[in-house]
Length: 190
Image (cartoon, rainbow, N blue to C red; front, top):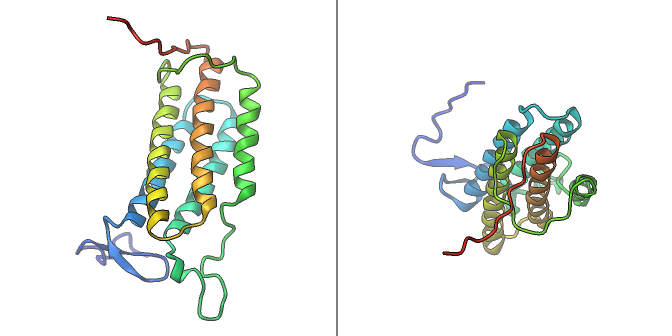
């Protein structure tokens, strides 16, 4: 299989099921942003962090690949004429969301209570978490807009919402683990 197909040379790409759309289509923007998020998660995973966190991040990367495939499948192409599902892989679901919630709760139980907003930074690994969180929020916004135009699986929206919470909590946990200062945002008076 060649890397280049030349089928997108005129500004279109194929969704799962064969429908061709412009590369700026909202569905493409949505799963493209999920792909960008997945790359940032890989960058976090490449940091000097615990193997336990790396395992969780690998799980998240796999879920994001699945989520991207779900987004790449338009509703009218989800099933074949025979009635069988076209996308024959386990979907992001309630169990995926609950996994993130358990990870958040576990990390949160070790952290001091938040009393202020927190400024991103302090360590490269922490900053990467905040960048990934921002990309995750953008992916979520795009998916919400997509859902307003054509229905998508609501577990996608919930998963992305919870994942941004996970990434924020991970940033706080890594701040603690790496023994760097968590800088509170305190508005400056002029």
